[in-house]
Amino acid sequence: MWGKKARAWRRELSWNRKGPGNMRGDGMDSLFSQRVKRARRSVIRELLKLAEEPGIISFAGGIPDPETFPREALAQLAADEILNNYRKSLQYTTTEGKRPLRAALIRWFSQQGLHYELDQVVITSASQQGLDLVAKTFLDPGDAVFLSLPTYLGAIQAFRAMEGELVGIPLLEDGMDLDALEEAIPRARKAGHPPKLIYVVPDFQNPSGVTWSLEKRRRLVEIASRENLVIVEDMPYRSLRFSGTPVPPVAELDEEGRVLVLFTFSKVLAAGLRLGALAGPKRLVEKVVVMKQAADLCTSSLTQRLAARFLLEHDFSQHIQNLCHRYREKRDAMLEALEQYMPEVEGLSWTRPEGGLFLWLRLPEHVDTERMLPRALKHKVAYVIGTPFFVDGSGHNTMRLSFSLPTVEEIREGVRRLGQVLEEELASLPSPQRG
Ligand SMILES: Cc1ncc(COP(=O)(O)O)c(C=O)c1O
Figure 1 (cartoon, rainbow, N blue to C red):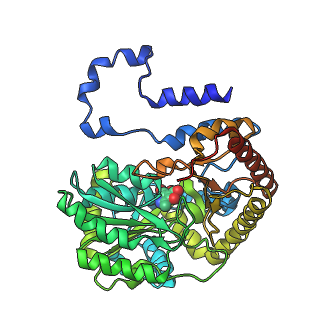
Figure 2: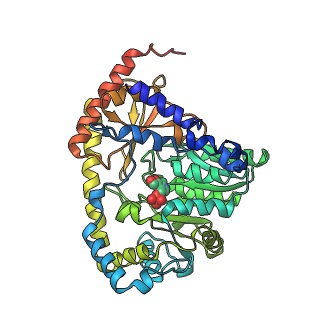
Figure 3: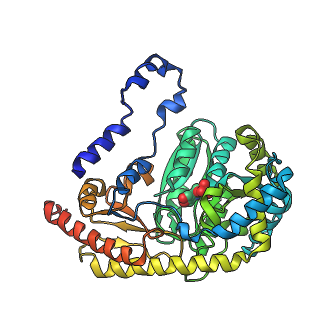
């Protein structure tokens, strides 16, 4: 049954659906831009549909736990804003965003060691819009963007949409392989791909959970300076640290003003508010604002007012501590269950993140996590296959596990099932060839 579903999903992805509605538009395909013709729907979103079947314990969805959203506080603020402050909350606002929210964010940034003025911060419709605007601001077709293998899928989509040349650099336990980055930059230049951006998620990266060391952050800034590149530092998980010591953001180490920071409320307040911010040197932020004017004029005034008031009237630090407490329990449950239930086999390893929502499994070379997925679904457990996070098509033996949504009990049971799935898969495969 699951084999059939997986095949149906593959068919869906091939963009060949014919139906009464689609037939009429056949002659219009030539009207699409080359960019759209090349674009593909997110494989992961399609896979997530399979994981939604009843009874499945899903480690697939990378979304925050809805129980962490401060519903009552937001409901009260929303009622007050709509009834009593509608002239502001239901009206357009400036493209840069509401001043009280930017001011509140400047205070949050300064707690991270980042010091900005008002005109260095623009409110975005969450960090995905930040990525889209950065791509539009810097990329001409064929310009090189350096990112890690693996990388957040939404960033890959945003940079691809602007026809960037995506250059994958291996991600090691303590951050990107910077020797490889130093070799790749002149190689891209020589091949006619002007290097423009380096995209990084240095804290508890999605999908791997990896956090960059201080040494690598410093060296990254040196490389960007030497090669005249902009660094995009995406930090959706930075506040979600459950253990270990915080490492300064890359932007704090930058003295030349070549780092753009992306912040989001999605994981620390509510993803549905679609609210975030982009901050950095004024001369770069100004250009991003022009791109945002064309995109949406402004981010929702109502959600900006809600977030600003939440930050002013509630204890945001306490709220974040509560989140960390909840997610820490889940992460610990997943790490313990992996120790207990995963078979002892050569080539199997996983990350031990100090925060965030994800951990990352590397399986023996001869295991293909996409091929194994129907078996996992049969055992009623779901994960996200690794390959979509790799711009070079590698990662067939990797998977992402998210611990944010399931309960602690579900995490234990789900990992037990996953251990069984892997054992069965290994037993079904011919032994790997040894060189
Ligand atoms: C690394 C990273 N960047 C950006 C985003 C986009 O999130 P949002 O647009 O909700 O801020 C995500 C979402 O999962 C993410 O993991």
